[in-house]
Length: 494
Image (cartoon, rainbow, N blue to C red; front, side, top):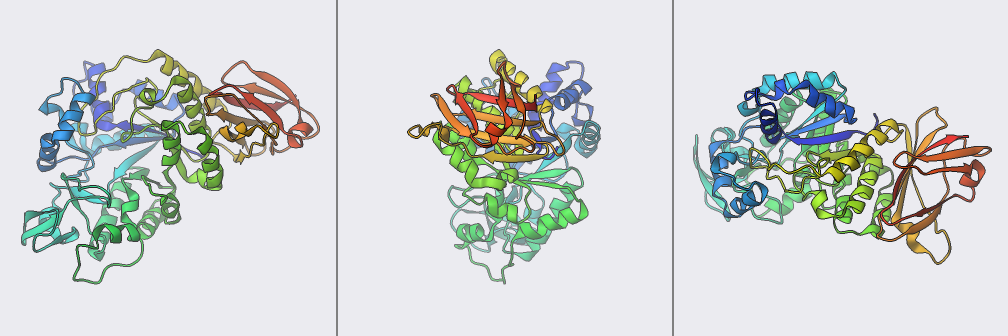
């Protein structure tokens, strides 16, 4: 599989749910996840599992999660009837880089990784580069690794370290207040960079790739914008951390995967520095805010960079897609996200139509009734895509032309052509995101089209057409799609 299909699971929520599902296995850990659960992942066609939140959280960071008034209100929305015992703290306030004992520890993770590998599934873990939790040992033993001063500065907090009192900053981005359960690392310091590169190498021994939290915060331009108000009395490190760190890990582990959580149009820059994929947040936003006319220019504008984007409809930071948009748009958007080159990215609960936002600070998520319609939707989509050539071989984002001069609706249609190497057959992903009908003509570019007839069969429905290959190349394929219409055509010679 050239273009990964990633599934994100909250490790703590997953184990909690499995312990309840398999009532005789109350001590179930990552290493003893039942075979049926792993088989289900393989059957859906997943190539990568992102196990989010395996690192432990200490008591100081947990206390912040318990005392935060706004979060406490959110816990009620996410998990009615919650108690303090349900609050473990944010998995992004990392206390140590050993797997949490609540999940079975490092040995359990290593066993799960082997079991996944037997099914062709690679393991992705979190690397949180910008900050560490309040309880991490470095706060006491290496306070110099963090943004700090010997005296108070705005938004700092005092810490009694092994070398005396020091004022440190909470982790933050340049636009919002700090995360009070964390401490900000200072990448201006060479010793901080070396220490974090070492942590990254340690994580890389446990998995096949990392999802890097808020990766753009480490770029030199962002660091300067965020922390220039805290002066330093040393010569700052030069060059981009990511360029050196990704190269270092990939030299030791060829094929290791880097996925960047990234925003602010810095995704391309991170890919230049060694990331294999970066979030495609614009795709998510255009779906969430129902902006069908903006999607095609975005995707065509990315061009070949689409192959280095992670396309998603939800994740642990975003509202649930089933509760955000109607079923018709949900289906069309899912076909598009699954049909694009790059990383196709799905989230725990998405297949079942979950609607409650699952807070990462909690040990479990609310039980919700299965949405049978959404389950049926994905129950049809995933096998169809698995059987197709999507994600394998050559791809091209085709440019739809107007079906007639005064009809601009072709701009609402997105078309991706996939053809496996050495094969005549190919697949067409065709999606109209608009809440109205849309028409276009599109010239196909697949190999061997001219000179004979072709049959187009929709893998997602009953539609079946016969077309002349020469016409497909010259005049183009005429398409007329209903509102939120989506097709996955298998195209084969007559």
